[in-house]
Amino acid sequence: MTLQPQKIDRALRERFRYSLPYPLAISYKRIGACPDDATRLMYALKTGEMIARLLGIIIVADLRRTGVAAAHPSEFGRRFGAPSFGTWLWILRESLGAMKEAGKTPFLKELPEFVHATSKHLEELVVVRNRFTHDGVPPDEWLQPRQLPQTCESATAALEQVLAALLFLADYQLVVVQPVEVVKKRNRPPRYVRKKIIMSGCADVFDHDKDESDEVCETAEALLIDASGAYLNLDPLILYSNEGTEERDVEGNKRELKTEIYDIFLYNGGKPTKRRYLACSKGGDLTSDDVEGGDAIEASFTELERMLGVPA
Image 1 (cartoon, rainbow, N blue to C red):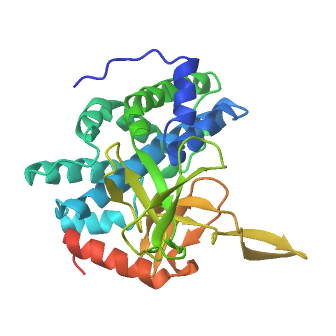
Image 2: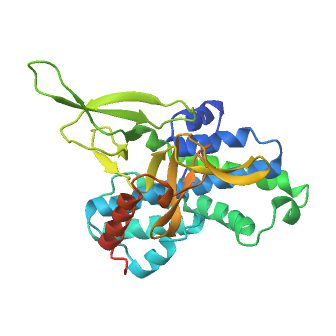
Image 3: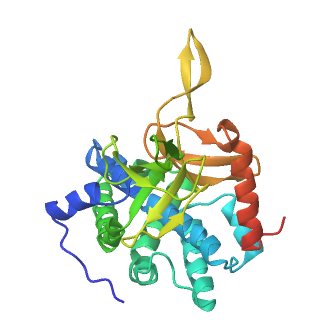
């Protein structure tokens, strides 16, 4: 599959903001609010990295679903603890290769063609992003003033072509299902109902829905649901929490306080008992030892890494 360049117009940009999963939509929205080219470039690259992170998380969860081990378990374990933009793309490619070799179809059936078609654009973004993260050079220090607009424009154009190819994600729902509620009525058997929070588009107020459930589940879980109702469990790689922290000035002293803002948090590396998560919006910093149920999160990671063949 060859990526055919698409005309990116206002209608398509509206779809990026309101049809894609929240982590991508909110990140893309920020580009339009940036005051200058240097900031706009940084947020375009952050959005590219968020694409790689979300898809990398999805494919790791898919390895678990299909029972396929990581292609290079030792290397996977090392990289999984400190994932960068390029690392997430490596995890994505290698995991798709492992699934293909095992004869398994990805939950996102469009993913192999998408990766093949967009790899050039994504790698271009990685090269620019690495200049900032690895060399620690702000864009206005290694680019001449006249180069900034051109570099920003080309990076944003590459990103928007990737997002256009990724619009198949609008056919899937990223949701958080809340712990089951038992609804009892006189002379009737109990019903088990789970509230769904639908994480779509860039609005911070999410749509809610309710489903009947045959399962009695006491925890919240992030799921990716396709049109048939089949789902991929993304727990514990994606969390919905209000337990993030931020540094605040309290009577002249810096203190870490909980934000108490609910947000979507995506796994972002770390080590056992202290897994790091990246907030999509204003949720602050989060590690697994900050979260109620942190022991259960760690147990889930231990089981995931065991199944993937990562050496203990």
